[in-house]
Image (cartoon, rainbow, N blue to C red; front, side, top):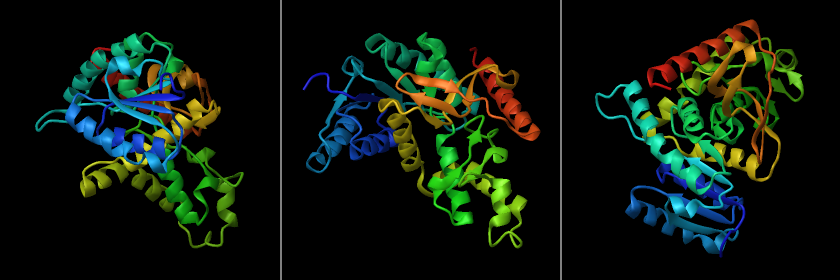
Length: 318
């Protein structure tokens, strides 16, 4: 079976890459899936394990491969990255992963120059920018997973507090996927109503300490990854499903609005840095970034986030 479509390739067979692969095949989104990793033995075991579910899923060819095998991919997802060594600083780790991307990204462009590149490796905003600069591709074709998972956590926690289906919660975590991210509460909505207007209609409005609750929810969003890693060693299911959502928007040409990491081009005076804003995502990658109206406090948080990321970009020589 040659040139099956849609075709997705994953660079990196760690927990995140494999959880994402599992989500992909369970949802029947792809006809061909190639996974590449330096650890060939581990990779072969993961692919064999996935293939054995073939009788119970939509038809899909799953292969362990290398860079030549990613030809004709519609989307290449990069989850590969080095882990922090004992005594190594965060900046040193970022420099190491930037060097790794200098090897990975040219190979992707060599074999599949037209594919959308989706960066997942952390720090995702920095490495998305590195991928963009190294690839030479248009910015709209190189995106990062951004705050799609953070936003899902926000919606889940707000839905749980308000006792509302999470599908009816609309709100975003924006800026960096990391310590300087912020919740755009001023634009959050429930059932078509701004959150600030919805709250007075709730039965628990008088007893609910709204500002304290929202602050607690945001803190839990920021601390979630640390808590999960402390408990089980890594996060993978949530990001796997977040990547599935981004992939669906791309492969199905949905024009979905998602807070992916993309190149800022002047919003609030911020440019030449990757960070998250709501963006229309389709088969071309980013169709348009939405310059939503934020509160003055949120605007300040966005600029602070951009400044923090730009400093790191400068520190690693990009």
